[in-house]
Amino acid sequence: MRVDKYLWSVRYFKTRSIATNACKKGHVKIGGESVKPSRNVYPTDKIEVRKNQINYQIEILDLPKSRVGAKLVSIYCNDITPKENLEKLDLLKYSQDYYRKKGSGRPTKKDRREIDDLKENIKDDIEE
Image (tube, rainbow, N blue to C red; front, top):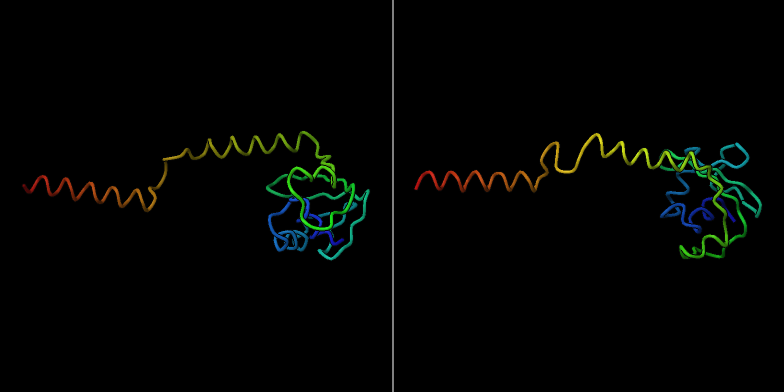
């Protein structure tokens, strides 16, 4: 099975084209080397996938015939990602919350419309 199809089947990527692009950009490695999307994978291969600034490590247990449900993914692959890499994900979430909290920053288009409506209502009240 092709590596891009495998990563799509075990739900590491939402679409197969995203998996293909990740391979082309060098985000997918087998044995420390970047691979083309057409490279075949076999059970016992270890894949390293860089996704969302985290290096995931996957060990292939079996090859699915097509995309599998989320509950069945553990039959086909084993996630051997070190805990340090997964802790980086939590740090990234906290750092994003720190820099910009919801509701701060520039107003959205909806916010601007509400502000304009409020200004018009105040202007109408003053004229009366």
